[in-house]
Amino acid sequence: MYITNLKQLNKSGLRKKALALVEAGYESIDIRKVIRKKIISKNGLLEFAVSADSKYKINLNNFDRVFLIGIGKGSALASYYLGKILRSKLKKGIALDIKLPNEKMIKESPKIEFLTGTHPLPSKKNMAATAKIEKLAKEVGKKDLVIVFICGGGSALACSSKDELTCSLAATKGLTAMGADIIELNTVRKHASGIKGGNLAKLAYPAMVISLIASDVLGDDLEMIASGPTVLDSTTKKDAENILRKYKIDPTMFHLVETPKDKKYFRNVNNILFVSNKDAVNAMKHKARELNLSPKIFSLKMRGEAKSAFCKLEKGIRSGEIILAAGETTVTFNKTKQKERYEKGEIHLTKGEGGRNQEAVLGYLNGLQTADYRLQKNTKTVDSSPSTVVVSFASDGHDNTNAAGAIGDYSVLEKAKNLNLDIEKFLENHDSYNFFKKTGDLILSKKGSFNVADLMVILKE
Image 1 (cartoon, one colour):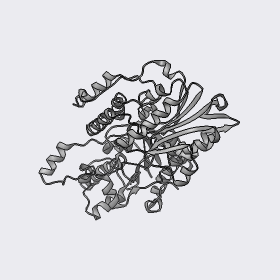
Image 2 (cartoon, helix red, strand yellow):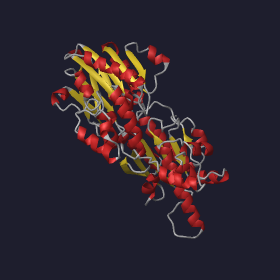
Image 3 (cartoon, one colour):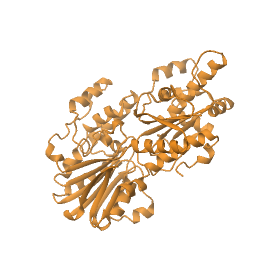
Image 4 (cartoon, helix red, strand yellow):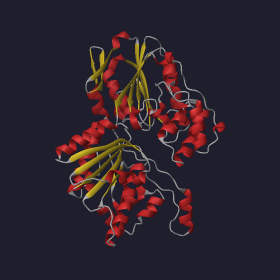
C-alpha cells in the first residue's frame, strides 16, 4: 500500500476505484521494483531494459573501475539499489538527493556517499555536495565507467558555484512567480551552471558514461530533465537571455555562460530514458480495465494553469469512463488580483501552502461549486453530479508539501459548506493544502517512487 491514509480516503465505491489506480501508478514507478525489473547483472554483464523490446548491454569486465553518481529526487534510493547489483564492481559512488536513505541502507553501502541538498531552491549546502560530484567526475579516466542516475529535482540540487546559486535563486523565484514553464526555467539554469547542460559529461570525458534518466519533463526531453547534465544542449546563452527578458528580468544581472557544444564530449555517453510518466499511466490504464472501466489517456503532456486543468479533462467524459493524464501544470500568482480583493475586504492575504496537484483539485471544486449554484438556479450548465471524482498527485509524493496531492468530489464540497470554508478564498491565496487538511482529503503517500511529474485521474460512475 503506497497511500498511507487510504482507509480515511476510501469513503465511497467510486473513490476506491480512483485510488486503486493511484496505487497502481505508484507501484509502476516504485524505485526498488523498477531497478530490479530493468537492471540485471550476470557474470559481469550488465543489462538495462531500455523498453519492452529493447535492451542495452555492457560488460563491466572491460573497465578498470566503475563509478556511480546520483542527482535528483529519488537518486539516493536508486543508487543504493544499483549499488547492491554492482556489488564488488563498484569503486565509488556519490548521490545527491533531498533525503537520505535509512541508516541500514547507508551502512550497507560503504562505497556510496549519500548527500542531501535543498529543494526547490538551491543553497550553499547544494554547492558543497555538487563540488564533490564534480571532483569525482574529474578523477575518472578513459578505461572507467560512470553510471549516472538523473532524476527530477536535479536542476535545483546540483549547483556548482556562487554565480550559479545567485542566478538560480533569483531566476527560479522570478520565473516561477511569472508562470514560466520548466523548459524555460531549465534553459536559464543550464546557462548559469558548471554541471548542467552537458557539463557533467564534459567533466567525465573521456570515460564511458551511462546515464539512466527518470523523466519529470513534458515530452521526455532528455536535455531538459534535471537540466541535462550528460546531454548535448541545443539551447544557447542567447536563448536564456531572451527568456529572462520575456519575463522582465535583466539578464545582465547574472553570469550566464555557453554550454559545451563540442560533440566529442558526448561520444562515449549513452543517455537512456529509464522511467517516465508513460510507465505510470499505462499501469493505471491496465488497472482500470481490471476494474471493468473504460480508460482513456487524455495527454502525457498536460500543462497550463493548475486550477483549470480538470476543466479540459471533464469535457465529454461518459459514465464508466476514466480519463488519465500526466504532465506538469503551473501555479501563477496573481498579486494584483489578490491586492484588489484584499482592499475590498474579500480575502486576507496569507502565505498559502500547497502544490500544483492540490490546486488542480481545488480549482475543480471551485468550478463544481459554481456549477452546483447554477444548477440550483435552473440554468443550463455542465454535468457536475455527485458521481464524479478527481485525483491529482505528485509521482514522488512531494506536492510542495508533505502531501502528494488531493482527491475531490461532491462530498468535499459538502464538507466545505459545513465547515464554512470559502473555496474561492483558499484558491485565491493558493492555500490548497490547508483547505484539504481541514476537509481531510489530502493524499499522503510513501516516498519511494521515481519523480515522473504529476498524474491526474477523473472518473465518472
